[in-house]
Length: 344
Image (cartoon, rainbow, N blue to C red):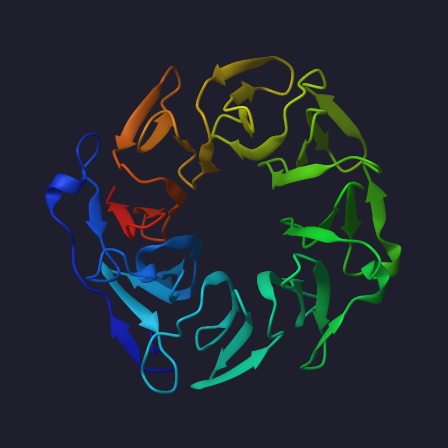
C-alpha cells in the first residue's frame, strides 16, 4: 500500500505487565508519551488492503502487520485533529471526519471542508454522493450532502435535529431525529420518499442483525425490531434508556442500558444477563461472532462463551472499541492507552 503523504511511525510496545490476565494481548502505545492524545482511541474501522483505521484524539492512524503509521499533513506531521470517522473511496482516496470539520485526502493532497463542525459519520450513497452529520459549537447537528464536490445542508431535514446517521447493509440510510423517531431513506427513491418510523419516540441506538432486521434502542420504551414490514416491541416494560445493541453468532441479541444492565434475548425470551455494571463503556460484536463488554464494574474486556462472561483483556482504563481485523486479529482501543491486539 502506498500512503498518500508522509507518515510518522508508531512508537513503543509497552511492558508485558500492562496486561495482567486473560489472553495474550499485545499492548501498543501510539506515542512514547503516555499522556499524549495520540494514545486516546476514538474508533476502529476496517479498511482496504488489510489495514485497520485507528481514529485518535491526535489524528488518524493505520495499523497493518503489527505496524502503526499516522496520516501526516503536508509538513510530515500528524494532523493534530480528533478523528471520529473515516470513509474510504479508494486506497489513496479517503475522507476523515474530525472535531473541526472534514478532510479529503486524495492523491497526496488535502482539502478541508465543513470547518467548525464535528463531523461523524460520513457515508457514501448513490454512486458517489456523500452524506455527513455535522455538529456545531452549540451542539446543534445538521445533515449535509456532497453531490458535486461541495457540502450543502439537506433542506428536507433543516428544521429537525438529526442526531445519528446509520447505513444498513442494503444501502438504506436511517436518520435518528431527537425526540421524534427515525427516518428510513432508500437512496434510489430519493430523500423526499423517506419513511418516518417510531414518531414521538427517543431513539438512542441503531443496529442491524444477520437477518438484516434493524433494531432501535429507545429511551424508556424498550427495544423495537423492524423486519422490513413491521415493528416488533421487546422489553417495553423496561424504563431504562437502551444505549447499545449487539448480536452474537447464534443470533442472540444483547442490549445495554444507562442503568448498568446488559439484557440478552432470542427475540422472544429475555433475561438480565449483567446488572450493577455501573457505566457500560462498550457493547460490541466482532466478525468472529463474539459479543464484548467493557464496564465500570469489571476492568478490561469480556466476552460471553455461551454460559458465562470471560475476561479476555485486563485493562485499568476503559476500552472504547473492538473489532476483528481482516487477518483475523482482534484489535481493541483504549481511552488513553493506545491499542491492544490479539492474534488468533
